[in-house]
Length: 128
Image (cartoon, rainbow, N blue to C red):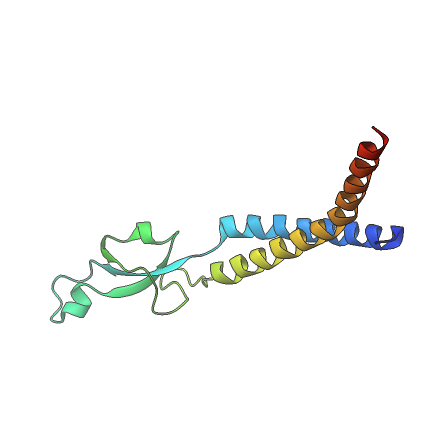
């Protein structure tokens, strides 16, 4: 069973994790997602790779190009247009870790309450 100091410590950690989670969710909204796109290029070029180049673009810059084909992944992780780096996977992984930690702490805090509720229910049944 947890003592008062352990409970307060867990609640402090829970507050910190929830704040970090909120910050990460805000960062995810602004995050740069990179994909490879085949775009219209120089139609007078001798090589088809110049006429329809494949370039990595972020979700913000892709609207600056006329896309011929969208690939589901990227060749690299840097936008050819603005230079931002793809950091969504890193942020989502950290978000998942934090959510798991929060769930674990909540379960630790709820366990003694559930045990007490079970005990009280048994006591009520016995007294009825």
